[in-house]
Each structure stands twice: as C-alpha cells, then as structure tokens.
Image: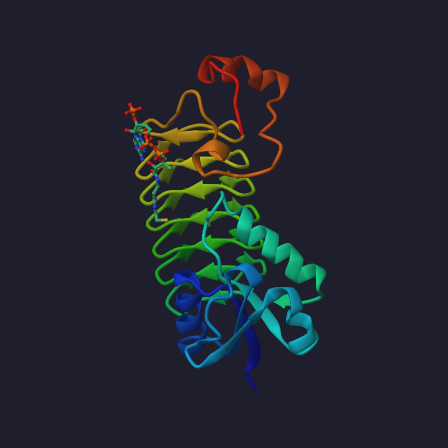
Length: 248
Ligand SMILES: CC(C)(COP(=O)(O)OP(=O)(O)OC[C@H]1O[C@@H](n2cnc3c(N)ncnc32)[C@H](O)[C@@H]1OP(=O)(O)O)[C@@H](O)C(=O)NCCC(=O)NCCS
C-alpha cells in the first residue's frame, strides 16, 4: 500500500513535488496545505488545499506523511520553519529520490529531501534533513551536505567536502576537494571555490571571493534573525570585506 502524503505548499515547487511523487515514488499525494494567509484556491490537481494551521485535525500525523515543498526563499528559512513546525505537530517527513539518480548503497539521506534526476551521490556521501538537490549535481565520496541546503543544478562538490547548514549553491558552481563551506553561505552561479569560506557571506567568481559590504542574509532577504557571527579569527578577514555596518 502506498504512503499517504500531504504536500505543504501550492506553488511551482509543490506542483513539481506532486508530479514526481505521483509518477516516481511509493507515495500517493492526497492533499495540499498552505498557511491561511496564502490560501487562495480550495483545490489543486483536484485535491483539497487545506490550512496548515489546522492540518493535524484533518490528517492524523500517525497516518499521513508530509513533504514541505518550498524553494530557497529567504536562504531556505521558510522551508525550514515549516519543516520544524511539521515535526512539532508530530509528522514524519517524506523524502523523494529520483529513480534516475545514482545513489551508492551506503549514502545517507535525511528526511524532507528532494533529489532530482541525474544527481550522482557517491560512496559514503551524507545528505542532511530538508535538503533540495536540483538536477544533475555531483556529490563526491565522503562529502556531507548539512541540513536545509539548496543546491541548484550541475554543481560539482568534490570528495571530502562539508557544506554547512542553510547554504544556497548556484548552478554550475564547483568545489574542490577537502573544503568546508561554512553555514549560511551563498555560492554564486558558476563560481569555483578553492578554499574554506566564512559564515554568512556571498562568494562569486573563479577563484571564488566574498562580495564586499553585504551578507547572504541581506542578499536573500532573511528577516528577523541574528546576523552571522564571526569568530575572532574571522573578524580580521571580515573587516576587510565588510566595510560598513550590516543592517538587517
Ligand atoms: C550570487 C548571486 C545570488 C548574487 O545575486 P545579486 O545579489 O543579485 O548580485 P548582483 O547582481 O547585485 O551582483 C553583485 C556583483 O557580483 C557579481 N556577481 C554576481 N553573481 C556572480 C556570479 N555568479 N559570478 C561572478 N560574479 C557574480 C556581479 O557581476 C556584481 O559585480 P559588480 O559589483 O562588480 O558589478 C547571484 O548572482 C547568483 O549567482 N545566483 C545563483 C542563481 C542560480 O543558480 N539559480 C539557480 C536556480 S534557483
């Protein structure tokens, strides 16, 4: 029997999730759910769209799984907030892994992940919770992708890399082996990252360098959160990059 699934969201990511879960998984989508403020239509694909605030009254958390189908908005914060709220309500979160992805036998994949076609996940790669891997990425052997990351298409992450929580990595970016991308970074499209990064900055170019005078929070409009905190060791470097106070 198929797992019954409610998709949280009703935008393009939700429509994609509906299509992929329906055509290529052991889940049957039975409804959509959005927060009341976004409840514009009562149905989608002939299925009910119900308020997220009341979801547990209509769909018993012990009988239905959820998938939070939200993109990288606000540096993944919206998806993460709904994911944590779904867990607080007692739901299990489903992950989708394309039957056309290559996933080695000992790869670990968390919950509420969405892994599109043509991803290559090599020996002992580890994908955290609430991660989106859009199509065609290479996640090298022993590399770790932290919770809540969004990795766009055709990104090459070489072996033994670590990507911290909440990062956004743009299309066609490349990471050399054995480096750490600190949490809350944005890596721009086509950038080539040759060394570790500092938390909360935007890196672009080849070799990748941080954009001056701004953080990733400002770039993707993260609201109401403490800005990235630099360690003493990082502050010297940050002061050369960020010349004026950061406003959020
Ligand atoms: C990094 C990024 C988020 C910055 O966006 P932004 O805040 O709108 O940046 P701006 O256009 O203001 O650019 C700021 C500067 O960085 C440079 N820059 C931006 N992105 C760059 C990139 N990917 N590579 C090289 N330089 C880049 C710009 O040329 C500009 O330089 P300048 O100040 O010398 O003129 C964006 O450019 C990007 O790469 N996004 C990824 C998109 C993607 O992969 N989408 C996949 C589908 S979700």
